[in-house]
Image (cartoon, rainbow, N blue to C red; front, side, top):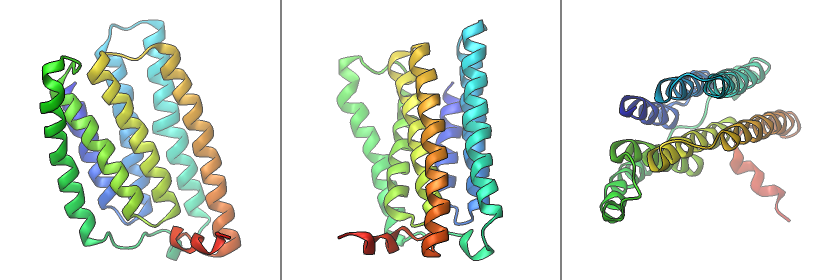
Length: 207
């Protein structure tokens, strides 16, 4: 399980680092496959486990990456890359990851953490996702960061409770698929109307 947590953290770092949106698609697909494997290997195989794993694979490993990939294919090459990551973002990413150790130190005596190492990887992935939201300027980078944060939250819940209730996992998958589909459509409309994928240009929409 901790190996899956480490891989999730590395994929989150890959999302933060990558400027090329086609790489972002692969990183997201990798996280989806990883989470489905976590579901299938963390509990005995039952009908519910198989369905949740398949749902995770279809939504996070298939639907969302495919929607982004198909949208990118309709855009000129100039809109398929993000701006360079600011230098300060590297420093902030290191600091927020180091801060997780302090959180573990504070929560350790309470006994709420079920798996300390998995908790570290999950919370670090969430923090990296928030850094990505602030530092990245591409519309689809914003979507990728939100999906990465949701993936980290799922693993974080597992590190605290051991497992999520089935209805919660299925509800999250439905919400995520609808939200991601809407954000992909909005990204298409914004690029079409404003001829940009830079979220900074949206400032002029403020009244």
